[in-house]
Image 1 (tube, rainbow, N blue to C red):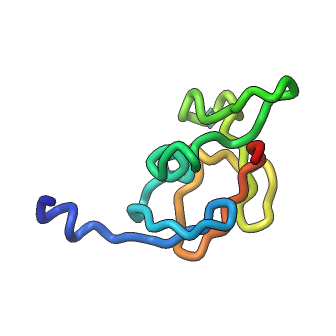
Image 2: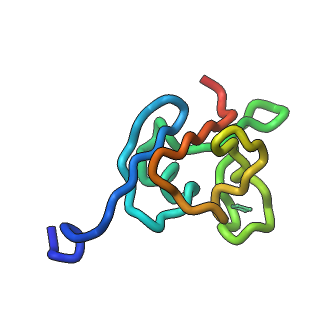
Length: 92
Ligand code: FES
């Protein structure tokens, strides 16, 4: 671990009921990606295919999640905040 890693601030978010610590300044889409396979994906398509962030720049809308009760938030355009509640619509 480098000094910069050790000094990086962390925030705690809740993703689908699971508490996780992520780097401050990270997008919600990045948090979903780095928190492992069980956290990846945002929803299922009408055919049941798992969907997740694609463009990373606010165009495709594949990354929509619910943040603090607000639906259809673009995960790739939203920064993680401490205490944030993130809900995906992926199949369980
Ligand atoms: S990943 Fe395409 S809009 Fe978020």
